[in-house]
Length: 239
Image 1 (cartoon, helix red, strand yellow):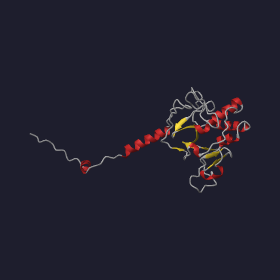
Image 2 (tube, one colour; image 1 turned 180 degrees about the vertical axis):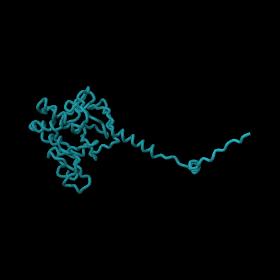
Image 3 (cartoon, rainbow, N blue to C red; image 1 turned 90 degrees about the vertical axis):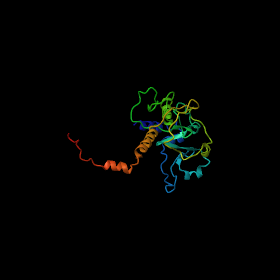
Image 4 (cartoon, one colour; image 1 turned 135 degrees about the vertical axis):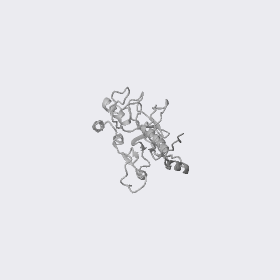
């Protein structure tokens, strides 16, 4: 429900939000590229800011000279490197994380199962619980807050004319479960100590499997003792 309302705000304020940002916050990444569906590594995980479209690796050739942004993935959520996002938009007050040796921010609001409106510190848009001193859980939530309260993004967008893909350390984009979200620390943009439940569950499962898979060896003597039947009890002789 909240997401639907927010998307309506974006659409109704299209004159105040650049086209590339509208598409970036609404596009579906990591879907199979229809043009290259027979190829390997055909997930759409690159966004062309000049053409406002998502691309797979096989689509890159005509866009080599364009501004390209890699979209990364962590537990089914789209994230971008904070260094990349900060070249395009003011990321102040957006909660950042450290994972896979990089600071990242979430692109979109993440679904939640309970209302956290009463939390001591929460996202100003979706009320997700946050660590101090952050006010937004994602770029999506900050953009919508600015549109609702200020009516525009004036002063929060930066002009970036050069954004090559491979200069920012291009990789497969997948944040593996073992690389849990780590605290950014006191420097840079800040962060929180947020170890995901998924990683903890995975570790617990590995330990449980190791325990249950261990079976002590059974010797022939032990088998004989287990199979031996009790004999008839012998009474002491009467005197």
